[in-house]
Amino acid sequence: MSTLPINNTSGDTNKPVVVGIDGSSEAQAALHEAVVLAQALGRRLEAVTVWQYSTSMYDAYHPEPGASPKIRALETAHAAASKEFGAHWPAWFSIRAEVGNPGETLVEASGNASHLVVGSRGRGGLTSAFLGSVSLHCASHARCPVVVVVGSAARLPLDLPAQKKENPT
Image (cartoon, rainbow, N blue to C red; front, top):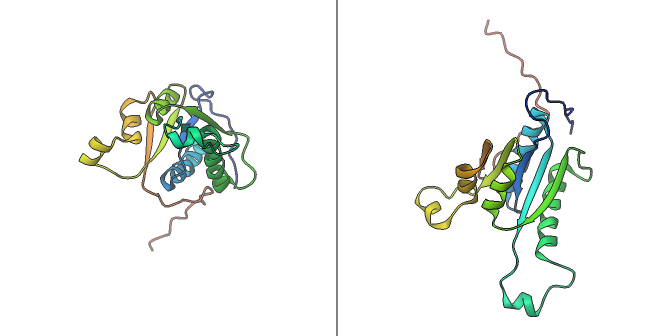
């Protein structure tokens, strides 16, 4: 995979593209699109994974040795990054784990982002009013432009060759 140099002269170059990661195929597609966007804009990319404390009594009495919700969330994000980049991640990419509500946490992260990229499982219409939707919450409340990747989007190659226009003669 090639990388573009990070040198953007328009606006605040300190604001990264932020992408939400949760281990779903939709989040994996969102990560891919966020990589494309960050490279096109010459921005850093920050993957945010959100975890919550367990409310299960089973977990309180029989915790998994050496594992915590934060560690599991970071492992999920690392797996997604490895799937996208392979063994060697670019220097302009980072991961962080935050505790909280996913929608609210990503909206908070959008306050210091150039763009927010999230995946959507495609539960539209009335269903989203009853089930709730992280992508809908982000699109409604984010403090930066939001890209919603619907479903498991078809992956485009990162190195798009220049297309030749054929002469119709």
